[in-house]
Length: 301
Image (cartoon, rainbow, N blue to C red):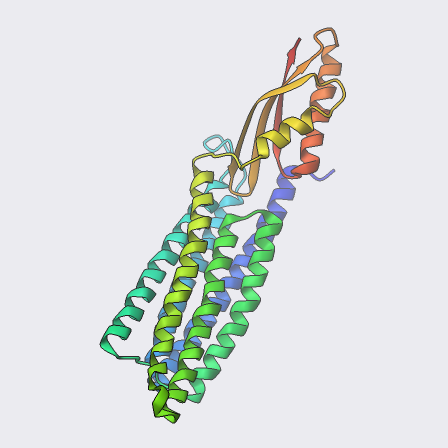
């Protein structure tokens, strides 16, 4: 039978592979945008290159976090190293909020000053279109891996790159509006569409980041997921022989869930029977939460 350590290491390798692919994609986009930005003199593309630079930093942090969290528990870290993923998600959330603040500042500044700083070139459209294709592909991959392995670090990375899709779309919209404004003087105000759209995207990202950040902080403070305690109690009490379930404690460490609970059993049964019942309770809970580390404390009535 395959032990849990091998199982966790297998998950760790797959998460690390997803994070590494994200790093390579981010690096490719940074190089491409820098080359096209300097080649065409487009400030919009250079700004996107800087944004992708933030993404590269975030991707590297995620890769390091996933690699560190995969280490097995040791004498100094009895619950493993999963909290590293939570810290990584918190860092990326903060980085997203800083990026949104910068986008908001630049958008308001451009609206007030009347400067759009958007240069229209064929390469500008091309590089942003490629950027969207790459970001859609990697954000889907990361979201899928994050859901499969319950990884907040990969989820934060996926969120980060999904915002790039909106950011790139905003740049394309701005370029299109500049072209239209240049062609039709009556709608020259469309030069401001880029800045207004950027503000809207920034507000959306702030809302999503706030939700992710709240869940991350809750995990770092050992907060139990809402409704999980009630579900554990209901599940344990369905096991024949369990009279009552109480004093449930739940904490998460990255993707790993730890559950401790007390069950009330008939005091006249043998120690061997009591042990069998605790194993039945563990199995019932792990049927719902497959990777949970469950500890059951039997109490006699």
